[in-house]
Image (tube, helix red, strand yellow):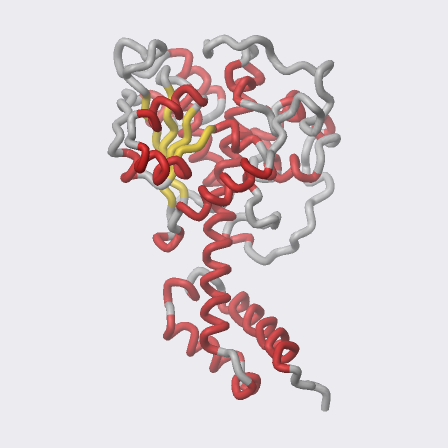
Length: 337
């Protein structure tokens, strides 16, 4: 697998974990960009369409296959729908759309979908900015090329939904809600991080934030990234352009994990806010303190099937009970006998 060259590959001598001075430090500006991107997505359709954009017909198709695999592992097979395309105008663009042998070989080694891995590539078109929820570019040159093709007004509108793949190597960027839960199927389960959770000893030194990306992976992919995960998590885009295949593949795997986490947390956060708004709208005065859980659930379901349907009945009841406790405190009502 031959990616564009970079000055150097990550090395253990330059960093023992992703928190040192050479690591990808997420500034307040970048945190704001993560939130801005999350707010540009619309979770009401219960799915996100994601387009990876490369300039070599290689990295995008690998990332597409990896995201599909990671999404399936996280019960999000019908929530995240990845695709990929290539910038034809790039000097790195291949002469034809056929799947490069080196890309097919990597996809096969990762156990990715053979159909997706071997199909002809797709040329990027600016119409994809409207057709897809999120565009993820392999490097900053590709992102800049896309945005420079737009007017100043359009750049401001579309910029939040055109992100760098390397940004999703940062656990802080991906964990926009500050919670560790991800998929709706795992919603409101124990929020404590698993201690060992089957993670190989070679990655036990990673911080809890770094573990969040590893926890999204199945055991086979965890084992694949184990030797260099501490040198990849939180890194800049250079790691995606390393001469060393192990770093390239590990970066693509972990970035796919980050994309999955980011999208699922964005969806969870938006539905959390929507459900909270329903509670506030429907139950806000002293008379509502005596409403039963069943009555409340019936009323909420009538107000919005789409929002309430995202949560199980048990989750809705739990949230209603917490809301009533908070409402009592807000109204200064003594609930003692």
